[in-house]
Length: 44
Image 1 (tube, one colour):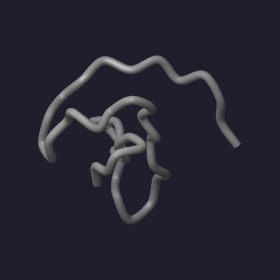
Image 2 (spheres, one colour):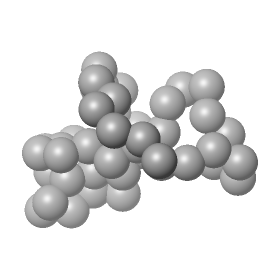
Image 3 (cartoon, helix red, strand yellow):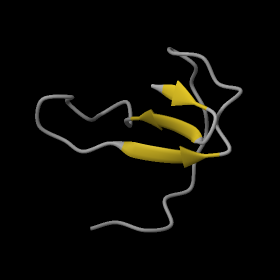
Image 4 (cartoon, helix red, strand yellow):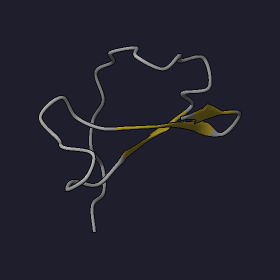
């Protein structure tokens, strides 16, 4: 999912029905299916 605030995705090894999402700030220029390098800075 991509909007003006950023993007929501997952790591390549995550299962969508089990694992959480990765929220990407400033990712509004991404398209579904893009692969990007991200640094995880927080988790809960």
